[in-house]
Length: 158
Image 1: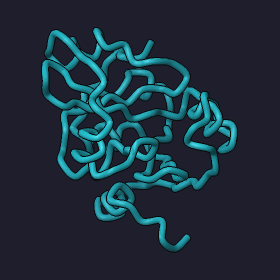
Image 2: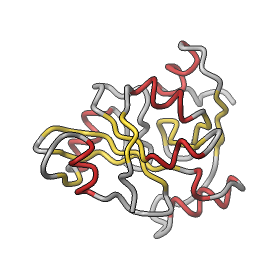
Image 3: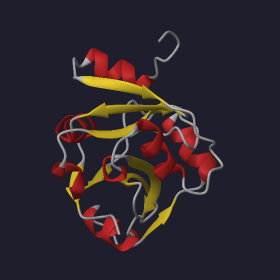
Image 4: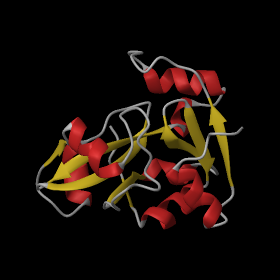
């Protein structure tokens, strides 16, 4: 569809990475947003991952975890080589990544941040992450996601 290009999808196309975009319509204020996105897309929720911008010992770090659970901040801190992790300020996350909340993609961010992807991603042939705007997911191999973001795979979901 025209007008769906984002920095994330542009990166995937430029790198010749196999991917599929999936538009959807779910209210960003929905209390169980991730599960609703999975339901609308007709895929198991454990294959849909959310992107969270955090601060590990004061340094911005991206965490990619299944929408079926929460981020284990202690596990993230350990995986990132730090002691303490907290969710980043929303405005700082948006300004640094170039994306808005609900549409932050781990790919094509304005500033490349250290990234940790939950180890369960490797259990699937393909996973879904934000394509860089609300209402658009991208399906790709978790191996490609890890490679393009130079991510660490670690058990950071709870």
